[in-house]
Image 1 (cartoon, helix red, strand yellow):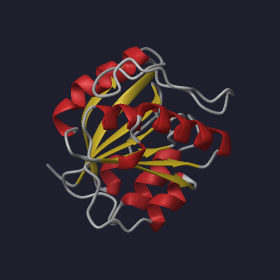
Image 2 (tube, rainbow, N blue to C red):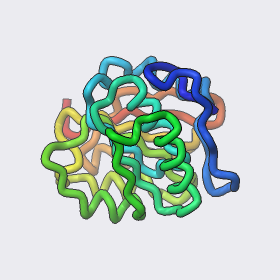
Image 3 (tube, one colour):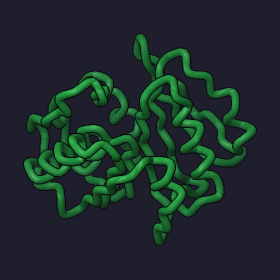
Amino acid sequence: MRVIAGSAKSLPLKTVGSDRTRPTTDRVKETLFNIIAPEIPECRFLDLFAGSGAIGIEALSRGAGKAVFVEKDHAALKVIRENLRFTHLEDRAEVICQDAVRAVSSMTPDEPFDVVFMDPPYGHSLEQRVLEAMKGSRVIGAETLIIIEASKDTAFSYLEELGYRILRDKCYGSNRHVFVKAGAE
């Protein structure tokens, strides 16, 4: 796994040596960032269930103003910090050791994040719990782009009821990225 583009282009990233995380492949990461490229410069980026930190680090490398990494696994947190140091991006990063739902519920940022990315463990409905926690919080605003990495068969029928709308749904074989915003069109 490596940084695809930007100031840390081609630098290799460490991964968590266990089955507790599921790194996003370079090909999928490149496709994702090609889609969201206009959103990245100077954005405030939130990486939930951050794993190795590869997604947030990619955002920083491509010019995000700040990235906040939320991860509860201590081995993964160590890897995130090592990857940030190695890529020289730690000055624009904040790492939070907390469960994603609790973190979102307790965060009180001065302004909403511009982009929120979450890649929760599949099959536990954690994406729904995070979206419920974000609803009405200061973490997101009307213009926040929320990206959920999920298994291909994850249902999102509850989104409208929670006040979200799907902008795009990009499938990659066994998984997908669902692009969401709060509020009606």
